[in-house]
Amino acid sequence: MRFLDHQGFERLLATLADDGYELVGPTVRDGAIVLDRIEGADDLPRGVGEEQGPGSYRLTSRGDGRYFAWAHGPDSAKRFLFPARELLARMRREGGAFAVETAPDERPIAFVGLRSCDLHAVAVQDRVFMHADPGYRRRREAAVFVGVDCAEPGATCFCASMGTGPRCTEGFDVALTELEGGFVVQAATPTGEALLARIETREATEAEVEAVAETERTAVAAMGRQMDEWDMPALLYRNRLHPRWKEVASRCLACGNCTSVCPTCFCHDIVDGVSLSGDVATRTREWASCFSEEYSWAAGAVVRASRESRYRQWLTHKFASWIDQFGTSGCVGCGRCITWCPVGIDVTEEVAAIRATDGEVEVVTS
Amino acid sequence: MRERAKPRVAVFKMASCDGCQLQLLDAEEALLELAGAIDIVNFAEASSHIEPGPYDVTLVEGSVSTPELEEQVKQIRDQSRVLITIGACATSGGVQALRNLADTEAFVRTVYPTPAYVKTLERSHPISDFVKVDYELTGCPIDRGELLGALSALLAGSAPRLSTSPVCVECKRRGYVCVVVARGEPCLGPVTRTGCGALCPAFGRGCYGCFGPSQPPNTEALAKRFIALGLTPKQAADKFRFITGWAPAFREAADRLERGPRSAKEGATP
Ligand code: SF4
Ligand code: SF4
Ligand code: SF4
Ligand code: SF4
Image 1: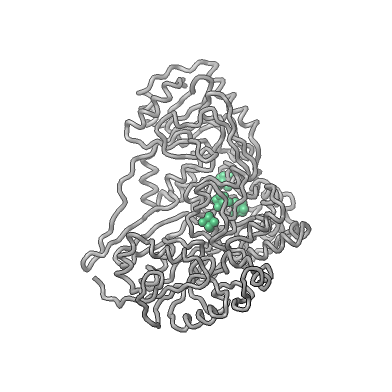
Image 2: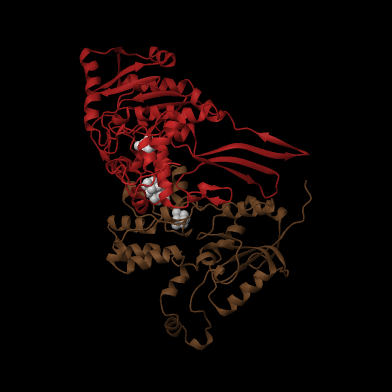
C-alpha cells in the first residue's frame, strides 16, 4: 500500500482532469452533499459532516480538514451512468425521409469519492444495462472510479450486513482510506496503476496500514442499521399477504423518493414527443417509479392500483425477486431510501416486522 | 411539407386572472411554429378578430362562478370538438374557491353598494362540474411546455401525455435536494401532480400544490408529517386549502384536519 498526501491527492484529481475526464464528485449544495461536476479538490466538502436519520438529513461542521468524513448524500453514480432524462433519438423530416440525429460525444467521467456501497451498486446496474443499453455501456466503460472507504457511516447505513462495505473491495480503479494528513491508496486495475505511477506517493508505514483496518472496524461498529437476509427471497414470497403491507401503505406517500435515490433502481419510461409542425420527433427515456400508479398501466388498466401493492412490489423486488432476476440482491445497504423518504419509512424495519410475524398469514401457492 | 388542414382553435376565459392564456402568448420562439400549425380564430386576449364556432380545439381558462358563465361554458362545449380546461381555476375552482367555505351572500352584502346587481353562484366551480372536459391542464399558471406538448400531440393525432405522478418524481429527476428531509420544510410535492418541473423545490421552497392532487394521494400520511414538523392541524389544513383547495382530495384532507386532532390521527386506508 502507498501513502498519498493532500498535495498528491490534488495532483491525482488534476491528472484525471488533464487526461480529459470530467470530474464528478461530492460537493455541498442546498444543504446536502450532492454528486456533481467538480473542478478539483477545492470543491469537495472538506470539514463537513452529516447527521442522517429516517426522513432527516442535516449537514454539520466538523471543523477539521477531512474530505470524506461523512457517508453520502442523495446522489449516486446512477445519476450519471443512467441519467434521469436522456434523449435517445431525435428525428427530423427531410424531404421524403427522416434524418436521425445522434447525441454528441460525452467526456468520460472520473468518479471521485464513491463509497463501497455505490461501487457495488454500479455492479448491480451493470447486470441490468450492460448487455442492452449502448449509452450506459459507453459511459460505464469509459469511466474511472476513485473509491473511498467509509470512516463515518450514517445512522441509516447497513452495508456491513449486506456484504457491500464499508471498505472498498471491488469495482474501483483506485481506492483511498482517509487518515490524518492524507490517504492510504491502492490501485486495482491497470488504469489505476498507471494513474498512481504518475503521482508522487510513498510506501505506507506499518501504522498506516494498521489504521486502514482500524478504520474499517470502527465503521462496522458504528453502522446505524442492519438487514437480516436469511431465507430471502422465500421470506417475502410467502408473506405476500402479510398484514404489514397494508400498515406500511397507510404511512407511505407513494412519492417515489426511495426509488429515485436508490442507486440500483432502474425503472424508466420512454416518452415520445413531436414538434408543433410535426417535422421533429424525439424519444426520451426518463426515470420512473414503481410507486407511480401510471407506471403500472398495462393493456388498458392499472395493474397495481393500491399503494399496498406498489409498496410490496418495491420491497419484494429489491430484496427478493431481484435475486431470481439478476442473481444478486437489489439492495446494497446504502440507507438512502430511509434517509430521503419524506416520512422516514425504513426498509430494515419493514423486513424485520414481516420476519417477526412470518407465517401469520398462510398463503396457498397455486 | 405535409398537407394538413389547420385546426381552428379558440381560447376563452371565465373567472380568472388571464395568467394561463398568457402562457400561450408568451410562447416566444414557439409562437411562429404555433401560428403555422393552428388557426387561432377566437382569442379575445390576443386579437379583436373573432370567428364563430365550431372549433376543433378549445382552451378554457377560469372557473364558473356566475349563472352567465354557466350558460356560456355550455355553449362553448357545444361548439368544441376537443375541450381542454387550463389552470387551477378551470380544473378545481381556483383560489377564488376559498369563498366556497364561507357565506357568499354575506360577502356580496358587505362588498357591493348595490347587492341586487350582483348575480353569482353560491360557489366557484371547476368547468367539469357543468360539461364534459376532454383534457385538464392543471397549474397556477399552467406549464407552457405541457400546453405546447398537449397541442403538438393532438395535432399529431395522439393523446396528450399528462402524468399523474407526484412532483417528487420530477424533483428527484432534476436532482433537487428535498426540503422536507434536509430542511424540515412542509412540502405538498408528494401529493401534487407533476407538470411544473418541480419549480418551488428548485428554489428551496415547499410545493404549494398549485397543480392539484396527483394519483390518488395519501394526504393523511403527509398531514401527519406536517404536524410532526411542528404545524398545528389548522396550519396543516391551510396548506391543503390554497390554490387548488377545492379539488376533492385536498378539500377532504383539510376537512379531516379541521374536524379535530382525534380524526386527524386516525390511520389512513391504503
Ligand atoms: S433499497 Fe435503500 S438501502 Fe438498499 S440500495 Fe436502495 S436506497 Fe440503498
Ligand atoms: S417508502 Fe417513503 S420514499 Fe418510498 S414512496 Fe413511500 S413515502 Fe415515498
Ligand atoms: S422537496 Fe417536495 S417535491 Fe421535492 S422530493 Fe421533497 S417532498 Fe418531494
Ligand atoms: S412546486 Fe407545486 S406550487 Fe410550485 S409550481 Fe410546482 S405544483 Fe405549483
